[in-house]
View 1 (tube, protein in one colour):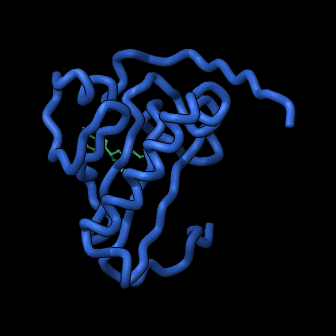
View 2 (cartoon, rainbow, N blue to C red; view 1 turned 90 degrees about the horizontal axis):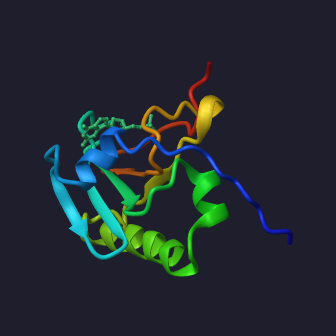
Length: 127
Ligand code: DGP
């Protein structure tokens, strides 16, 4: 496997960077050295949590190219822990991360959407 070298310009004033600096409040679910998780301001399901790395990564491409093994492990470990603590492990849930233009990403700081609490229907919109 060749090493990727994605380098995208990170906007330090994006909304999640400001949440990380506590300039903007959030409804916090979890925090440790590597990860912050908080409830989405426009929830698409009964449970809709955003799980983000504390490091300055634009998107999944940037994260998977530059993040350390510890950062990557922490993000996914916490995701599973939150799914369990939110009561989603038995009923099931969906994890998605929009990346870039075609992914429809709006906030340019990597975030995993953890959604559940109801039947979620088709994975992709029909259009
Ligand atoms: P995406 O389209 O994948 O970039 O998702 C961005 C999500 O971020 C969207 O579901 C709404 C959410 N969001 C945007 N601004 C805020 C905010 O200020 N606070 C919180 N908690 N969520 C936000």
